[in-house]
Image 1: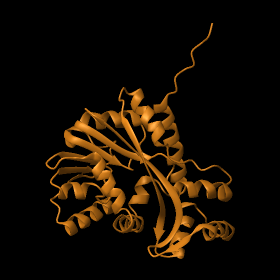
Image 2 (image 1 turned 120 degrees about the vertical axis):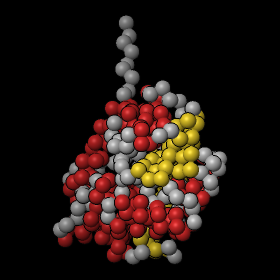
Image 3 (image 1 turned 90 degrees about the vertical axis):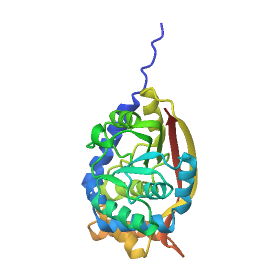
Image 4 (image 1 turned 180 degrees about the vertical axis):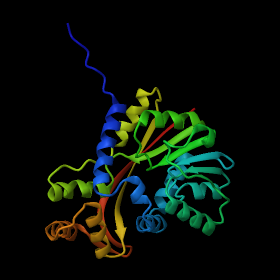
Length: 280
């Protein structure tokens, strides 16, 4: 008699991996709150959006095909990467975004494009209540799924959507996390715990009875910095490289890999991002 193997619990897998990632980020002072509340980090993100990410944003918008006049909920909207162009196209946009600097960045971006006002709920997705969120034609979340209790978070997104849900998440760990995974063991003698990836997320949805579509975008990318010194300082901070010996390890790693381009200094890498969506 053969016993059936127990089915993997992908919800538990995600939650355990995200807990390990949060703990490591907390050690490094890089938890979601403190990281995105630092104006320097937000400024770098907005600069990258303005200089490097326009093609990616256009592809995301085209892939969702959201009709003008739709009501859209953007979860973890950041500096308005998708919500500002959606508002400018005629959508009624609500965002859930906990970071004050990100919200200020979104308002500046909105003013530059003369987009209509965007309703803002300054909370994490977990904190925001269904009553204040309301129902929307489309719910989107782009690279903003560092969430615990993923089962409840996905159910809440599905409940808030009248027509469709669109998620964008990493199929490979993001390039910064891959750099961390190389350097963290050399600096601290333990493996680096990166974010759970989109294959786990897709299986989480299946476990919830949501059978979503998935497409993959692959592109050459890299985190851009204005100078080599700015790159080094960012890596020192994120990786807790405090001693001279630790800084020398980081410097050697970066010097072997960084490239100077017309857009600044970058560490080249390949990005694979999944677009996961379902219709109601």
